[in-house]
Image (cartoon, rainbow, N blue to C red; front, side, top):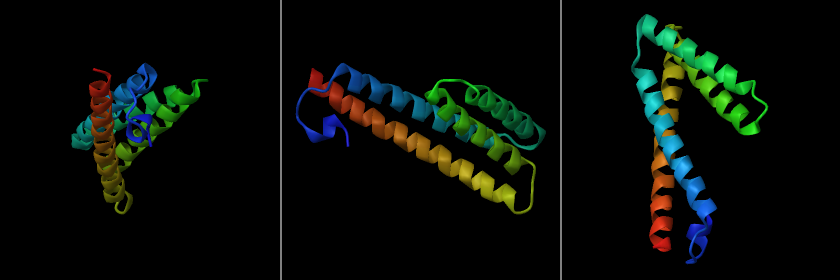
Length: 124
């Protein structure tokens, strides 16, 4: 739970900025995964490969937050490549996981956005 949900006190600027950044990042990530799931055929393979390479680049960073984000991006790219390669059993499963992840990220972004707006309202 968050400080905003526990008390009626005014939330700190740090708490609000964290909620806002998380809301924007998760919403953008969910939309990006939904768009990535729309690519089909060779374009989907290329997009998935590019996302995988981007994730590998972030994963090699020394910052723990970048490593975490890189692993998620890399996993999304790998799932995209697998789902577009039409592997009999893994293709549909990876496509479903990609869609579930997209909807989950989008929902988490909206939830954090609502908490951000509630906290912002308490500050005014």
